[in-house]
Image (tube, rainbow, N blue to C red; front, top):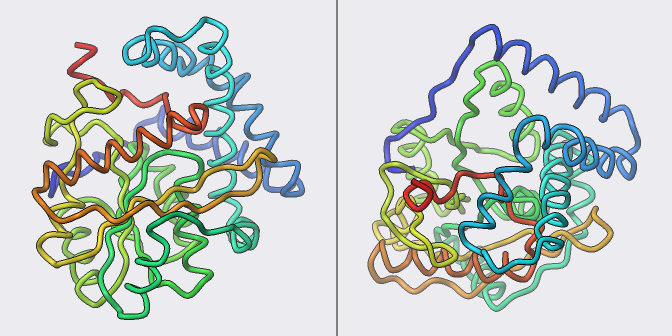
Length: 297
């Protein structure tokens, strides 16, 4: 999303009932023990919601667009496993303190870890960049439990009723949070200049973004993270919450810092970093996104 671009919130009758249904599902799941609620949420989204909402077909279409050589068996495996991960992520984010306690034991690794710890010790600004992969809020939660001062720039949900519920949930994981838009970016800038660490997601199609590549195809990408890093001399570190085989825990992977160059070059390197880790964990990326709109059109 380009600087200043915001999501429009709707509050129609359909949005009200969709919000009501989601809240009921989440509320029911939260009554269950954590070890049970997470896999159940994954199953419900994968087996029930995904086919009805059209997510299954969108996953197939995206895979056909960028990875046409995948076997039918592999595609159908991902059609089930991708929304399963998405469902787990959703209920984890709404699990608040229980989720935080779970990720507090996450293992940190990667070549960028020492640089991140050094920046923390020196109170240097850091731009943390991730994508809708694994659980994208696991790194933020894990870092906060270790005493890191991490804020996040987020995109408001299109459903205005559900957005307030979502904002409350992500605030419980940690604060501050900044909505995309001029005011949110202005607040994020002040936070970075004070030595904070700001989290960014860069893997959604942004109409005002730069025409870069992801999986070898055209993918418009916001340059905001790189532009802010250059302007305020912030360290840029790709970071990911990789879901482990038990489906409940994570490794927090800190990749090597992106060298300062141009916003376009830095952002392309961020796209490449995300693509690399997605290829190693195909089911953990949100293939439901309409990521390649120009290519598809």
